[in-house]
Length: 77
Length: 240
Image (cartoon, rainbow over all chains, first blue to last red; front, side, top):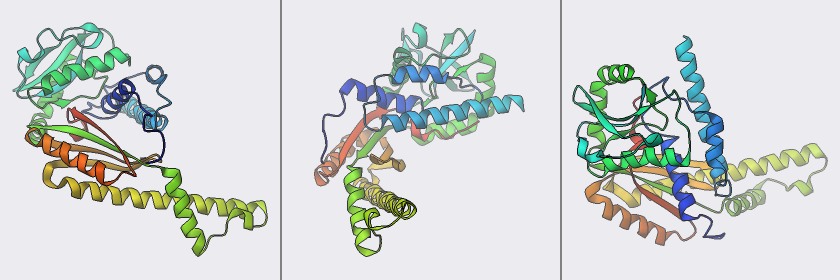
């Protein structure tokens, strides 16, 4: 494949993979997950050079926002 | 005082997490409701901070359980009252036990396949142009040029999607019955052909890794990022 094969550093890849799993997947009890979007922004600082990380951030933030909104809606209803 | 919940298991025992420090340094422990154990730690407040330390603490606690048995991992941030957790387990007991049976003796492996998307799109557009699409430079007027560019973009995206699907099928065939279940996203981003999670029996992990290595050898035009073993994050569809 063309391109830089050393695009990832091991520790960054490890963190990105961990984030991809723990923030984006797993068992959810509706209405109980509340994470500040601002907090997520902090942990991604320095990761935006990684291939796909910007898109991953968008996906994670999008879903997280959706979960929070849905959770809030459930409590209101 | 709330609880921070890490995972559920019907086989976890206290020695698996002895003196294990979890979120914000609090010790992890087990609480049991109707034969289902939840790994928790005490938690002050309503919201877990997403810090590097907390994310790794969350994953570390679950990995200690995973070293001995396969739990159902909670997503990061599961802060809950003891009463609410007990109610959840009681309400969903049968579904949770079914989920635990589904993932028993297995772990999740993650494979991301990265490609040179720009080169693939260029090749696809060149092919398509040869048949019917005029290049933007041959068109007259800004509207026509815009439409031509849009058609090129769509042709490139469609080509990527088609090739991503072919890669997903190819990988699935290479892995065969080594994987118990697959959860895959084709072209989750433009730079990624495939993001797949595989549920693999522990006894077949070496075979799985060997097959991924063979696949990697076969397709040197692609880049493979394999990680694991993970708790079965992608195989916990139970939504309350």
